[in-house]
Image 1 (cartoon, rainbow, N blue to C red):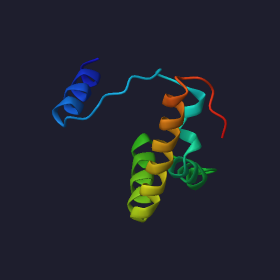
Image 2 (tube, one colour):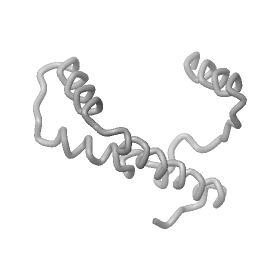
Image 3 (cartoon, rainbow, N blue to C red):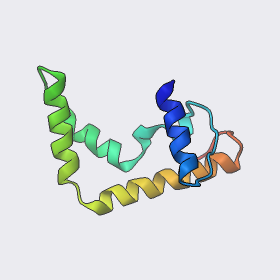
Length: 94
């Protein structure tokens, strides 16, 4: 709970508008966005012995991605949030 409060305080300190939304919405599933889909494909079929091995592999993959990959993913997420919020949480068709 402390991390949620800290995050909310940080958002307010930047002067950003905080938008409330349900904790889970099938329209907002992170797996629908480019970055996570490619990460899932990259990790598919790999086996790891420890959590640290997974963390290292993910960090290496993230570091190898070009900045535009992150921007495209972020923009798609923003567009999806906008659609969901404008429909007041009702189902959003793709």
